[in-house]
View 1: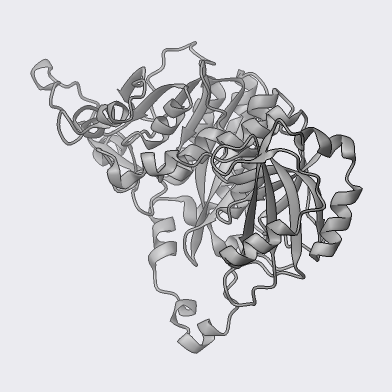
View 2: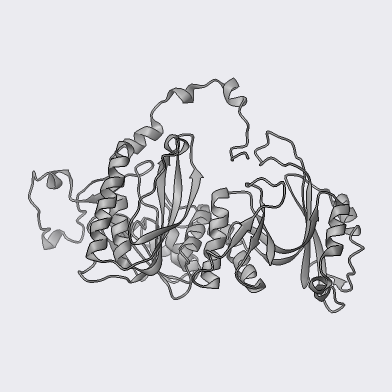
Length: 475
């Protein structure tokens, strides 16, 4: 069955991939690839109204809607049209065997009128509801806890220059709610009420989206090698996954801001299971013993790429340049010793992350991480993401951060075991990728590209005002 999937109008690139990941989570391997999409007639691709065919029954649709952050609701579509007369004709033509089981005297119901890009007054909503007398409702009305909810969804020509995708003509949908979003967790987990956060703590909505892309659920082990204050692990733990983290900064991992304000207090605040462990570890020199592999079900992280916070690796500049020899920390200084570190370029960081994931993820496990992009390169069609022979790219979702750059959430799935041959091929692909992206992947270059003055930033206000305010893609 084709369902009407209504999205929240935000994070447009993330909407369909999240649904497909949740279909994989609840429907089993291959279910995400079996999801089909199409747009209603005369609808822009950035419209919140999409038609989706799922590889399962209504239970799968309800599970996806209830877990999703960006799906407002999934509906069995009884009809749609450009006018209410066309809608009536479509509803009358919809098969009675699909309608009558939900119109019985034993069931209670409620009709909700909703809209996109416009406001419908309470009086208008009542008039619209009274117009559905041709549907043989026999049950009783229950506005608080109905057994069945019917929705009237309307979009109209709301004018241009308002930041919303263009509308060709008015459309009215009518359908039965199959599943609805549960977004109460966003105010619960919002950063402003969290005990321990840092300057780069992941926004709670994005953290939950990353956990969905990583298929976090009970019985799965999720690892974050750049754990920081633990925002991503908090989201994974909320969905029942076991968690582990690591960070190179011992002060973040061990101390926080005191005994009652640290990474552990965040899990205590939300009454979530604590991580199995949080390591002081360097992504460049991982602590795993030789031969250990395939233990994590997902690696979900936000690597440091040098815009708000730069990456660090163990060694210090003098040690890495060979000016001083390796040293051993005396026993009496071990407890309070903070190891020296050196800058960690994005190219090296991404290479080490892919190498770690190829070795430590189970086959079928997911690697989910953010990757920065200069928007000039993207506009020229030169965008290319890191590759590894162990992984297949599942989705790439762009989040625009400024005129200069954006970040892309890459979701990769491990498709084969890690071997010496795979390791050699991974090194070759990394060298090729590094040569093609040498300009901005090295230390400090991305930061300079984002923050240095540029001529196009000095345009007059009149030039800026002449541009369309909608920032999406026109078709």
